Image (cartoon, rainbow, N blue to C red; front, side):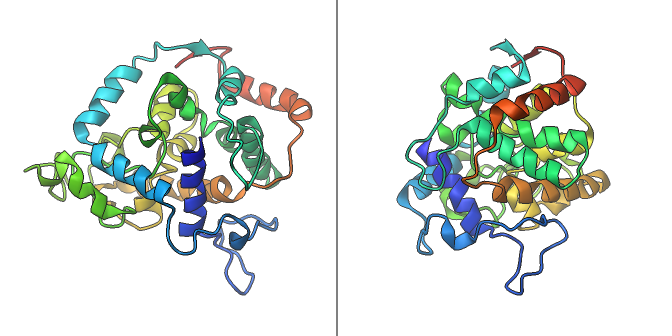
Length: 291
């Protein structure tokens, strides 16, 4: 898990808290004091080699064909049948004892995110989205390498946008010189809508496919695109958006502030919070779902 945590810490450096130097906050940030950027690991303006290696593998291997293979492999949803809290406990085996920023379990981190959202008075579906948003990382427990589970997501089947971090690593990707996939639109058309666009494979896309029948559209956008930083941070791929995408991406940006900046060393009381969240889960999900 150390590579996953290195990637997540890299995000905090690349996309610092929107609170500016004067102390005012953006419309999307929370009212609670946030952990200062410089209190996290300091990469001294240069990413660690493990982060670079992660992106080198991710960018070289996330092809259109690879994403299609993984969709066929996993989207039959026939690997496990379990409830949401059970999936959280399953994910909880992914504990990184080497992370100096926090020694929290995966469940505790999910609860931090959802409790931050809850404290700001957001709707139940928003709180629940914070609780479950990383459950797709159980792909690691199914044997997937980390570069195929986490990392920035992006469309496949068209040119890789320059706003994607470490864009130069895509030169080792077989799709880089593909006669169709290397073009601006690729296999798509102008303003086709993201629902028709195939994304790189990872925990976002997987969890979206698992829960898409149970949550409102706003929540599904948050889950499916919360790692699509090239779009909601760099304004790339706007030519693929339709009107609805522009509307719902406001929710992705709102969620992203909680996802990146709710991490702290204050431990949530899992035993005390569990009854509330199990009741919340029951409002939206059956006792078991297919994974």
